[in-house]
Amino acid sequence: MVGLGMIFDETYRPFFERVHRDGLYDRRFGDVDVPLSAVATRTGMRALAYQSESKGKIADFRNLAGADSVDKLLDAEPSFVCVATPDNRHFEPCKKVLAAGCHLLVEKPSVLKLQELDELVELARQQNVLAKVVYHKLLDPDHKKLRTFVADGLLKHVNNGYCSLLEPKQISSGQFAEWIKGRNPGTYVACHYIKLIDFTFGGKLKSVTAGGQRGLVGPAHGPTWDSTQMKLTYEYDDGREAAFDIHTSWVTPDNFPGYVEQEVQFRFDNGVWNGHSRKRGVECTIEGRTPFTTKITMNNHYNGTFVEPWGERAQRGYGVEVIERFVRELAQVEFGGPREQRDDRLAAAASLAYNDLAADRQVVAAVQALEAILAEAAQGRPDGVVRVNGEHGGLVLYRPGQSEPNVLYAPPV
Ligand SMILES: NC(=O)c1ccc[n+]([C@@H]2O[C@H](COP(=O)([O-])OP(=O)(O)OC[C@H]3O[C@@H](n4cnc5c(N)ncnc54)[C@H](O)[C@@H]3O)[C@@H](O)[C@H]2O)c1
Image 1 (spheres, rainbow, N blue to C red):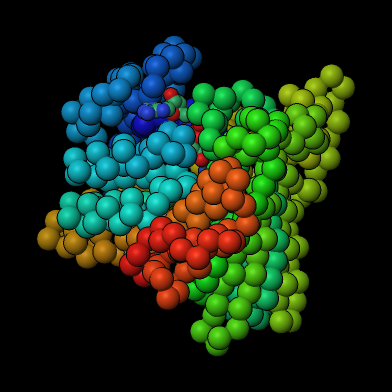
Image 2: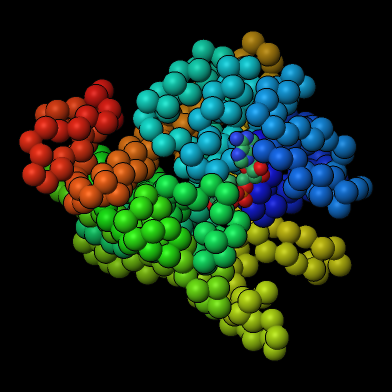
C-alpha cells in the first residue's frame, strides 16, 4: 500500500482486515491469502498509529517512510500494490510498481496527463500485469441501475445533464492541507462523474470548458481553487451531441447535513434520471452529535459501519467492494486455471473497461484539459476551451485572443 490517508481508512483498511480474517475464496481460484505486507508513506506516522491499533486485526506489515519508501516496498516483492497518494503524486509510484512487474491498483484520478497514461499502459503490457483504477461510484447500486436502464434501451439517448459533488471545508483546510496548494476539487472529485458519464453513455469526448472560484483555500488570484465548474461535450455514433456540467467544491460548511453533497440529473430523449446519493431516505438527529460527528443524511451504501443482525461489527459497501473486486480479478488471473492460460485470463481481466487504465483515456483527457484551463486562468487568461481530436491534435487548448493553439497531447485521444 502506497499512501495511508483518508481513503485507506475508509475502504482499503476494512478490506484488508476482512480478508485477513476470512481469506478470499472462489471455486475457480481457490482459497487465497491477501496479507497487507508493507506500506509506504511520506512520514510513517499514520502507519505507526495503525500498527498499534490494528493488533490482531491484520498481520504484521513493514512500515516504510521517506523518499525511497516505494523502492523499499518493492524490494519485498509484493504481488500487487495499491497507490493512494495525493492526486498529483500517482504517476511516479505507479511507474515504479509496474516496472517492478507488480500488478497495480491506483486511486482516481489515475494520472493527470495522457502522456503518463500511455507510459503506464505500455509498461503494464510489457510486464504482463494488470493496471487498474478505482472508480467506486460505478459500483453504487443507483449508478448500476442507471447503466442497466441505458444498456437495456429503456432510457434512450442522453442529451444533457448535471452532476455535483461538494466536499466539506475540513477536507481542504485539514486532511489535504499538506498537498492542496495549486490543486483543485475538480480533478479530485469531478473525475468520478466524468467516468460515470463516459462509462455509462459511451460516445466520443469532443470538448471541455471550465472555470472556478478562489479566495478561501488560497489567494483570490492564486493557483488553488475552492470550487470548479466544467462542461464536457460528447458526440455519439448517430452524430448527435450531449453536454454535461459537473460542479465541485471543497469549501462546503462543515455543518452541512451530509458528509458530501452528491447529485446527478440526466435527461434522455424519453426520460429523466434524478439521483441523490445523500438523500436516499435516512434523516437522523442526535443531540450534540449531528451534523458534526454524525451526519443527518448519511450514505450507508459507500462504507457504512454496522452491527450485523448476527452480532458482528462490519464496515462494508461499494467503496470496499470495488477493492475486493479488483483482488478477485487478479486472483483469477494468477490462480484461476493452468499457468499456460494465464495470458488469456490476463487479457480477459484487462478488457474490463470499468477499471482498466487503458480504458481511462477520455477521463484522463478531460482531467488534463481541466488542469490546463485552470492553469491558464490562474495566469490571468480565463475562458479557454480544449477540443479533442480536432485539426491541431488530440487534445488542444484554445485561448481567447491568442491565435496559437496550445497542443496538450498530439496523438489522437
Ligand atoms: N475513491 C474515492 O472516492 C476516493 C476518496 C478519497 C480519496 N481518493 C483518492 O485517493 C488518493 C489519496 O487521497 P486521501 O484522501 O487518502 O489523501 P490523504 O492526504 O488523506 O493521504 C495521502 C497519503 O499519501 C501519503 N503520501 C503523500 N505523498 C507521498 C509520497 N510521495 N510517497 C508515498 N506516500 C505519500 C501520505 O503520507 C498519506 O498517507 C487521492 O488520489 C484521492 O483522489 C479517492
